[in-house]
Length: 443
Image 1 (cartoon, rainbow, N blue to C red):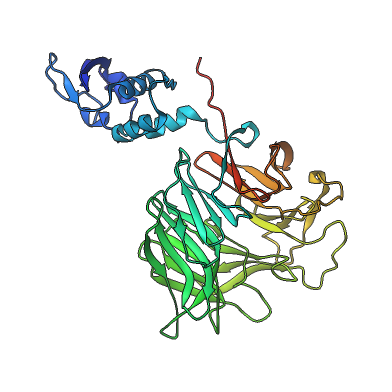
Image 2 (cartoon, rainbow, N blue to C red):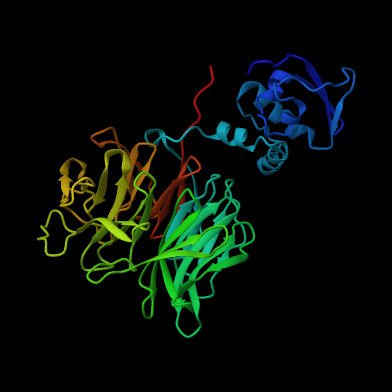
């Protein structure tokens, strides 16, 4: 940064004196508590050189954070509780610095198991979703359990016996939840909730012919222009994919399901910024056949589609269990229960699956009670869960480069990547794992 002066500053924090330089404080960034001490050219604001700036905060935590700004390394002494340190870091606006020092930039090939969290209820979980700040939420039956980045649990979100189908983060303070309709009550659909208190902020309603309809909401997705998408099933015409404004909760659009296709039962939605389209995938065993399509809401048109309806299913290939669009290569990746990866070209109107056997890890042998594989794409790496491990594929040919596995918890039923962490939810025990990339050593 040009213009930074090497002036010394003195702070009195909770009765203890600290002395540092403007260069060290500038490392905290413009939006931090210390950023206000500088002008727009990063010159220190005029101060009396003999004066101290008094801050009525914890001095032990200030010492840790000041050392972090000096060295880029985080050392927490035994007398400083980590939760207290994070509270102080948030006050000074340097919480991101603490996180960056605790774990490095996400890299699937360098992930290490950080810890495992046992949930409060037994049985299978529905979904796990990584939050933008390193926390997560876990859907389990009619409950959604929310954790901050320190894995402190917030008050759970209870939907009163309505089964949760999916969940997603609007931002670090808000979670959207989709749930089954409960007949005779008009409940169900979607709602936006506070991640910290569990309070319902508003419901996302479906209107048909100017009438509010009851519906079951399924798979969720969102776009960068603050839209939320959900697959919907109603009692009459409300089959398809709805669109809402995530800020106001108002319905914007609805793509109705056409005869012979499946949208309302979709297992997965994914917004594609480059195509300005929505990937909709309805997969076996929710339906007897698989349906994958790209929807253009501007023209109300299905611009690309594929289905295995009528196609012979060989013993080796079986059924498509998950799908994910890969915009960089204009393709869609699919996976079967043997973790064979398949690829379809989005530029071809008559696409077929090109299966790749090099990813086969099961050698044709299925587990007694397997979980269906899931796919994720993050920073140019492809992730696929199978049984009790997650495989990482890298490079233009998607070569298997690493595998993530731990010794207990059973098969992985879902996983999610976000906030520089990977979260894996196990099925046999209500437990989820947290995988992090170790920070790069500072010489």
